[in-house]
Amino acid sequence: MADRFALRRRITSLDPETDHAEIMRLSTGHEFPWDYVRALEFALFRTYCVPSISALLAKTGEFERRAQQRYDDTALLMGELVEHGYDSPRGREALRVVNRLHGRHDISDDDMRYVLSTFVYDPIDWLDRFGWRPLTDHERLAAFHFYRAVGARMGIRGVPDTYGAFRAFKRAYEAEHFAYSETNRRIGQYTLDLFCSWYPLPKAVTSRAVLAMLDKPMLDAFGFTPQPRWLTTAGHRALRLRARALLLAAPRKRPLLTNRPNRTYPAYPTGYRPSDLGAP
Image 1 (cartoon, rainbow, N blue to C red):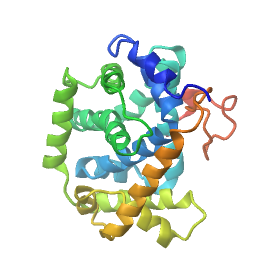
Image 2 (image 1 turned 120 degrees about the horizontal axis):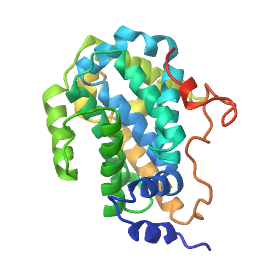
Image 3 (image 1 turned 120 degrees about the vertical axis):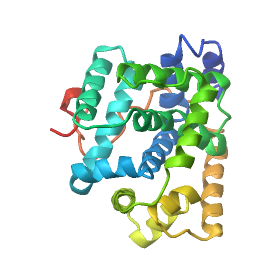
């Protein structure tokens, strides 16, 4: 059997500050591709618990009209940064798109910092519970340094300069700003409907499974009904069983990043450039 921990040793041989882009590419694309995608889906879901964020999304109407495309755009643009590097030609092109989209709206620095923090810490929290192996400290710090560098290129000011301080900012921001609003509920429902559309099961089943993965602050901010404890326990247990099975799997040889299937741009990699993504 191939050495399941060879990439972990390679990661720990790198410097999490100067080699953060390579560590992120290995960790995200090779070690935990499915987990990073699921974690970032729920991370974006979490940001909609902030009324100022959900109000902006409701105002644009993009989630109401083109929820799948907005999801694919975000996933692919972030994937471009990880796969090719934020200073590569494709990475710079992706960042120009992101900055163009954000520049159309009056978004507070605090909201921008908060969204950025979810990209760092929500995957870490997910993998602490459901990863097939524990994350190394190198991977945790690399995620912080990677997205802090992305934030600098997006013009996001005031991002804390240490891993712990940025984590503390995220927790404090959620405690202060998570609150129910009608726009939270609307954007949350559009997102829930989107998640349910991906599976060939009745919506009544998939929606309950998704809601069982949300914590109480999220449920309260959306006004969603909490699910029975047994359903949450069953979901967590299934994810941990999956992790045990992956421990026996062969290491991934080819990264799974922007080359994963998507519903809006199925012709990739020949069908679009990063500049083609995003709302016109």
